[in-house]
Image (cartoon, rainbow, N blue to C red; front, side):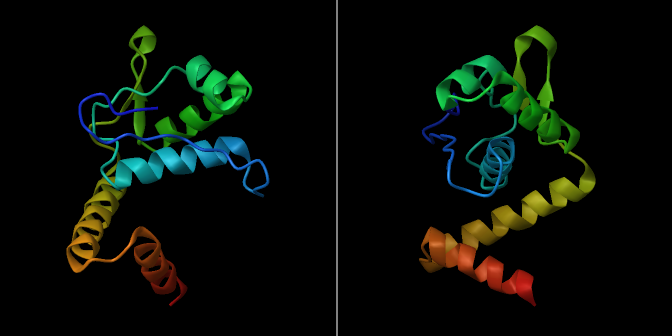
Length: 127
């Protein structure tokens, strides 16, 4: 899965040994990529069948991920044109995305690694 309009490449990776089901892994990774600005509004997602083939999972697995992403306002489906990162989700999602992007920009400026930044977030969520 790639973002067609820029240099960033985004790939979904499934962990067969994870407790998290495959559909949730896909949903989470796409959501995180949108929040991080890797997938930007208007980015076209692979077809359900194409991504299922790429990942080696059932079509229904990816379809469930896409339905949940659409329900969350992360993506929008435009009939035969396909699925795209939504231009705007619900207000709560937009505000959360803005905060996440500001955080990412700041920790990059400070020189934190991805893992260090994630540890900061995990620690903050525990409080």
